[in-house]
Image (cartoon, rainbow, N blue to C red; front, side):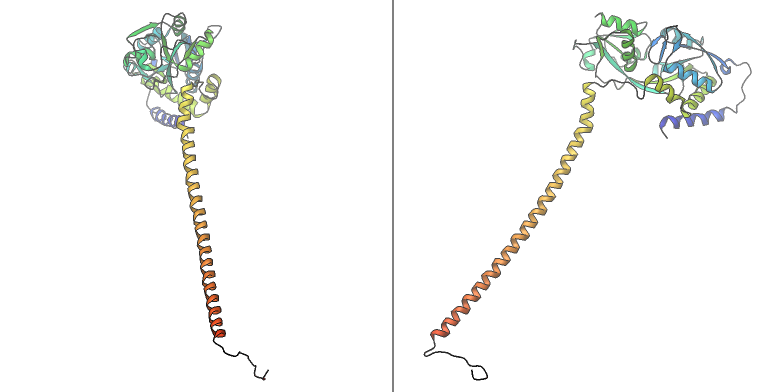
Length: 346
């Protein structure tokens, strides 16, 4: 059982227990009809189709989770800075795509995360002005106002020069026009948006931003525990029954479409192929050493055997020579001659 299914089981159990609590009639937070809002240009998670209707991975996932617990959803479309403020003020009930950050904990409550991704640095191809995070210190970075990326670059003081735009489409256009040095945003979204905008001159760098991890959740206004509980229950159900995987396959394919850079490939080679080669070499050396020792012992035994044989032959040669010497002495000491007879007198 994977972690998502374990979390789903846990939240189903918790919501089942909490479901025994008595609800108050007419409580807005426990109503069957809720209003949410979606961004128009955050593909493939939240966007609009040709008719201006909201769609995307997070939109479909929210609708499926709401349907699983009997919630009827009305979806508005608006810029991120506006809909984020609307949720904080209680003008809408929830948002389908919100990265959980320390800055937002005071304003919203979050469901369990349904997707975790990392950010990337986007630059114009061929500039070569950014090769590390340290290079960003004196560069002008563009982020969407109120986005996770803005909170990240300010929290970690990535640059002294930060510019905000209302949308990432605007940010990428200004980057392409050469007005600024880099855009920081979520990698998959940036790649998809650049494809949609047909801007091939901007590319994500291989620079790693480990602190810029985005745990995407559904968000409700801080304190709206009942709606949060129902959304967690719905999310748990769609994860457990396979609906989550079907929606993910529709929008993200078999795997998250993160592009591998040369540095990523070299990192994989260094941490996987290289150790395997070293291990294989070490095993080969051990096997070769054992074979050498075996062959050396065999040759040593063979040489020892030859030496014993030569020693025996030398001893036999000495005995033969001694016998020959004694016979010669006997013959030389005889005056007349020697003859022998058998018992028959022959």
